[in-house]
Length: 314
Image (tube, rainbow, N blue to C red; front, side):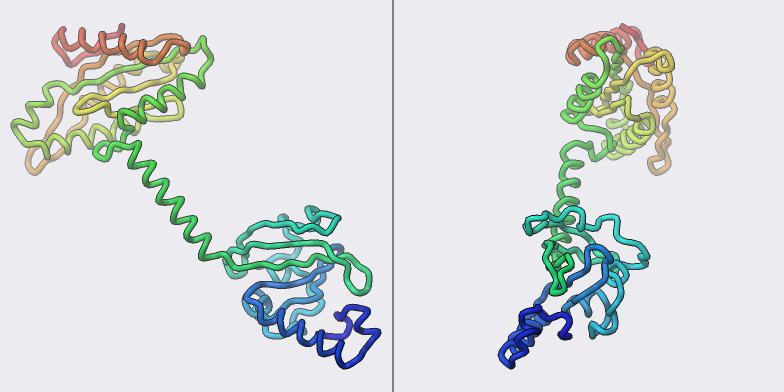
């Protein structure tokens, strides 16, 4: 440690024991498995970096190699101006520690940082930072978050059709309903594939699954922020949507009817397809979802009773 970096009292004393203490302190700091550095809060000039910081972030072995440089030039990658996340303005004036985390742009490691304002030996105000590498912990956190997302998908998505399952459909359909004004119209249609049992009986359930997956893919293409689509079970699907002048219930139901009825799935040498019956209802968004669904279900019953392969609007 250069004399200009020694505490002023020790420089005044300049006794062997004081020099030894400073040397010991520098040795301790250099052997910490943590980043330790000091920078001027006004000029951002680096005043001290321990060897761990020099090696793992600065990419150098001696402080003289970065002396006179500003902290963001050494600690970050390709920066010519102070970091937009600089903690200088956030540091408590009473000397308390400011705790935060960030990903370093030079070595892509995550650090938990403890920053505080201290007074340097020449009287200027500086930032002292001690930062511990928490990259492994962050990787575990990311893996846990990804696992949680995967579990959420498994809990909400029907694996065959990639549509919402029954439970998730009701949850997100009701969220859509509650997001609309009470005077808005909420449309709901229930689809039942016509004579789907014949496909399973004639070609096997694997063939039926192939067609269901293809229909699910087609229905998924119709989903947006104002449309919730789910598989209710077996060959039955449901769609909730915000009905507007541009998306009137009968027009949208006919669009869905054509989309599903035109789906063709190749199963070995056979081309599978089927039509669908659809029951449609729309009510003010203030109406409970179960009531709208009951009305759509009655409309579906009428469509099937009338010969199937058609749309019936309640």
